[in-house]
Image (cartoon, rainbow, N blue to C red; front, side, top):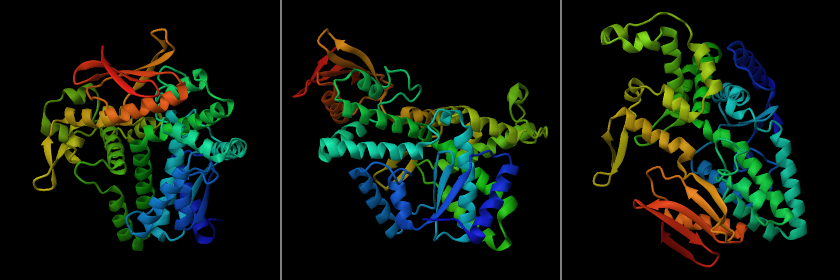
Length: 435
């Protein structure tokens, strides 16, 4: 790796000044220029090249490398939430791409520093990840690398069983509960603590994917079109920017959805398209011309950037008009003609479907209910049924993994086909009974 230098370094400094002039506020950001191979390696480790060794990172690298080799995907940039922030640029990027990426990175860094869902993240995680790797390697030397890797596999299969709302509430934080209450060996508990910490570090990135990418796209577009582009750059920028925001029926592009909502907020608050007076106006033609010239758009989007996550962002600011503009409908795949077709245009259903996919990332919400179920030392979990039944195969696999750690039978209360059921795994066989 080499630090960005020469004309690219000058460009970086200039874009940083423009970004700060617009009001973006970020930690020191260190850029490194690397080739595609090294960028894929770092991306495979989640952005942390000093992370602990594990076979899954190799699988991710293999997938990324093949995607790049076959021209199916390309990583233009990678930025790490840390103080200082670290960002990686691909050395084969064009000049226009580097301008886009640098501006995009500074906006991400502003989001990391200021969004409330990142406020409790470890700001020295680069060092912490290296520390985790060292401790895990040391444990492997003492306990045997195969045994340690197998336990890491088990922990990683359960890493989504954390509380997305409050890390200190153990009922919904099954990993945290197992750390405190399960009969673990000291080395196992230490590894689980480290992996749980990493899971919580990455959590806000998953909670704000649409906002974060939308925010970065909003600012790279503004900085480039208003400041950084030369006349010869315009066509290339338009082409690359359009590719970033491209969407297909039945899919959500977080870059596109995020930037359009932020742009809509900016326009509405500039013109005064909000509040009781505006909402109660029934003259459609008058509302189209409504412009109080308040100029509060930028102030509002900075406020939104600070306080919201994807769920609250979509819930509050995805308007019926914006749904229509972005063609956000409920789609279904038609097997007869091999295309996606609109099956519902109802805005509420569109938002409900989108919000459901974002709430807990579309994963089942499971909590610890009783650690001494029926006085037998069994662990009782409860599934918060939200209208969608569990996938039984996946539920049974989860019970098997938890049971390996808990050592006693593990039970899961859920609803299947409208009936309350109790799924049980005792370490040998699965059982199911009605409640």
